[in-house]
Image (cartoon, rainbow over all chains, first blue to last red; front, side):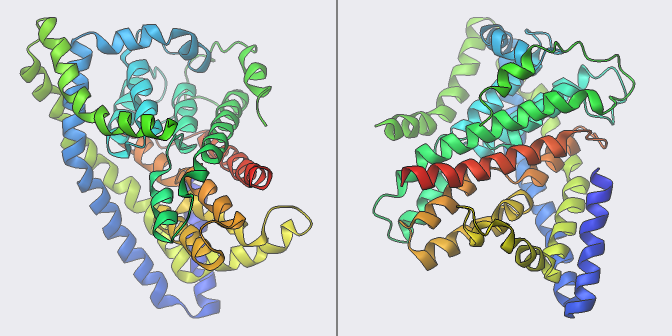
Length: 215
Length: 177
């Protein structure tokens, strides 16, 4: 999938550049983006090191297991393949919590930690995503957050009288998006072959339950 | 009120976690500093491991935008919503949102500037921005970090979520404001 999208984006760019005569802009777009990508990655080193260290302390202290146990009903519904006390659950919970609070800096390392933990449960091909990974990604790409701080700041800077009016609407939109994404991940998982592992023991019961609140 | 509470939690979450987690460790007789260093060692490698994935995705998107293909896509899609409550100006926004964080922020800011920050369409754009994430960036970072190349149904699932979030954002704003 990514192979096609990746190639299509660049191929279309070239075709449009020929028509529009925007070769320079395409070149600039490529070079600047490569630089930005490295800056983003390297910019993560400090915060990543800090949170991976703290996460290890939380793990050794038994906090991650505790968190997983407390949220067992939800985790069993969303991630039936992940044992409730596995460190992956704790890391995923912390990632989603950090996202909700708008703590993007903390959310990324925690999410990566969660993905690493999910990878340890991947008993198939390590280059192929598991069902749990895709569902977790659905939660992340939905961008669940309670306070859209950036957007509030933008509206306020433009002289809005009530910049926080978008808080309830954002929460509703992001929640619906997350439910739709997670439900879709559950519905689609049987149609995409998972790299060699046994078919996931996903009950058919949970997708319809989520589906009810889809809209 | 709710905003103050959430704001307070957000402000104190990091310092409290940074002290609270090792505190529990100390109580449980964990050698907190040694364990911290052990976990922290992975930080550099993880960050560096993401680089090729992120360069790949961001370069393709940068070329797409630079060529003017993004604008072309926007113009092509514009007539699709005539007759619905979905403002034509906002049609390209969900697509832009999944591809580019800075691009979509600039787009929403521009809408707010042109129509006024308290206009219905500005609130719709703001809600769409806040209600979603830069999907392809997120997927590149997380799957890149663990070396997963076959993402299976991750992209379709994420895009369904993005479309639903966008439609709900417009509908809720139209209803509420």
